[in-house]
Amino acid sequence: MEPTLLPGDICVALKGSSAQAGDVILFQERGSKAVVHRVIGMEEGPRFRTKGDANEVEDRDPLAPEAVVGRVVWVLPLGSAGQGWIRATMGATLLNQPE
Image (cartoon, rainbow, N blue to C red; front, side):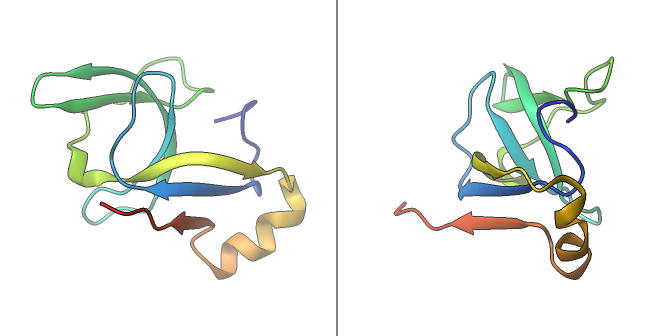
């Protein structure tokens, strides 16, 4: 997600799958680690099309809403200073919202 986010930055995500094109989301597909990418569009179903800001091509498979953990609403720009904390935790904080 460079240059928007740097390795070690801490993302705060609002729990839920309400996101639109341009939003940065935290997602996790079954059996994989959490990923932060930008929503670049929507498909029927609905499904989210995503892409990391530093990537030249979009992600191969659109995401089902169930894979979206939350929408990034705030970033603490720690860069390399935050890498130790990330190794010890998931590196993302979720804010509960009423559903």
